[in-house]
Image 1 (cartoon, rainbow, N blue to C red):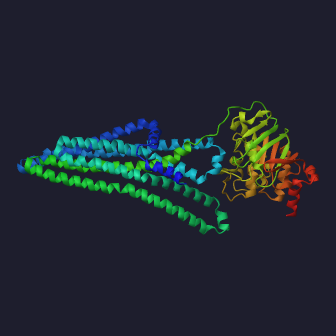
Image 2: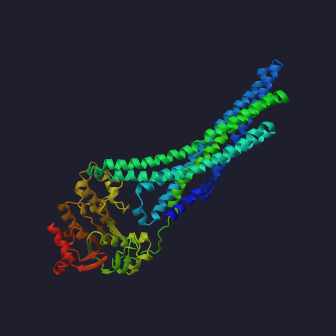
Image 3: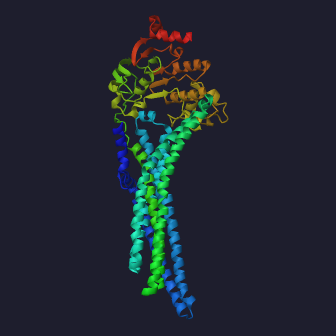
Length: 596
């Protein structure tokens, strides 16, 4: 345990500003380098305005001081051109500042954010189903929304630090030395100290930002879970326990956020203090130089103004350094998702029509290598057969469906469809062979017709209505406010749970694929609807190879063959009557339901 903790602490001890995460952030924004260079040009022009303003003001002060010592007519005439030019410089600086902010907000950041979220979405499509099974939905959403949003602000940090910050500091320092090297020394000596403190504080806060963002993902996952299961939570009176759990997690999230923000924000007061000391030193030294060395008062005013201007880039650098550490915490979570290994795929395609012959040859599979599930499974399903798969919970019934659909890949053996090894087909081609209805319904926000046609986007309205009629849902659809054009969703109360299941069955029927999978498809319909649905299914499954998983054994009595699964192995198989006559495990399952 102690060794593992030392390993966990090791990265934190070696945290630095420029690390692999920072380098990758730079790589991510490389496609936008043209816009960033344009922003850099605007920044250079802004710096030029910032440098020109004190020079112009210093000249005006010298003219005014000369007039005080030797009043002559025409003071206003001599000052007006300089004042107009100074006003123009400040106006140009304001316009450039607005233009640069508009550029970063509406062009660079937007494209960067949209592109990164598209890549994450595409990545999720290529990840194995096991990742989705093990990862809370809220955590994935938090990475795609909040973390990517924080990463998009990286461009601000880069421009502010590398261009507007350090470059402006370098230009001001050079001008100070040119103007009067004696007054420049106290200002320039304190600048490296300010930057060092900024980088040090930013690095100290990085580990807290990491914890803060990870806890943010857990909070989002908990909130999503609580909202999704709202009715269950209320039914079991678990509100207080859920609230307590959320409060504890939120307190930890807040604690790390406060500490990270404290380390980030404490830098600015320190820089303001050091800048004030430099300002005082310049003012005192400048007064002495005016009295003892005859330095023009305009020169001193120019140096003081530049010294005050130096505080802005120093604060900008301090903010940018702490901000980059904050962004790196979000970036690590996004990069971890982008770097996850993708499931390998083949390029094989299905040629010609599919008869639907399915063969399992010595198939072995387990979710956990230490807990074998499917062991040496062998079976052959002829085209057009209706195969029922039954067994106790955890026996491996749904696992067989997962292997057929290639949601998971087998460890050894082969699964053949019409003699073709499914591992040689691409996953998309393999799944196009199956129409599938799960126990848990899924409807997206859209019309009834759009939901039914989800797997068949090019079908006509007449085909949609026919599929719904065969699935016995046409009658209740027509009673909806807008019929087939009624907008529904997963959370819609316009249709009941059983009606939602019927819609998903209609969706599978409309797809008209050679193989059919029904995983507890009739679990959410009433007895009368179930009987009607069974008749429609029997009629429509003619000529199609069908796999039906059922706990209610009364629904599969007319199956061509029933496979009885126990501990991942087929312990019995045959027709309903044959299995009952054997008085084996299936007989026990069947009679126990009626005893209950």
